[in-house]
Amino acid sequence: MNSQPKSVPSASPPPAAGNLPRLDSGQILQGASTVEIEHAGQRYLLRVTRENKLILTK
Image (cartoon, rainbow, N blue to C red; front, side, top):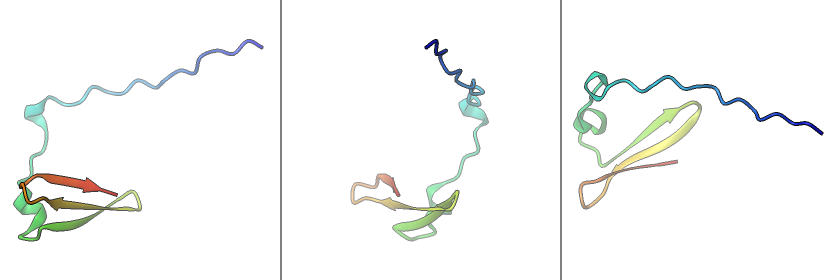
């Protein structure tokens, strides 16, 4: 059997860091320590830890 490697579609390069949209976490959290984010029919939780770090979980 002669199988050929599957071609991987080339991804476009990410935009330069200076060109990315930027949101302040306060805009997203609006004073809450946890918010729910819906993406592609899935729900995620974005929360702030006691160490003031952000964690995104499914």
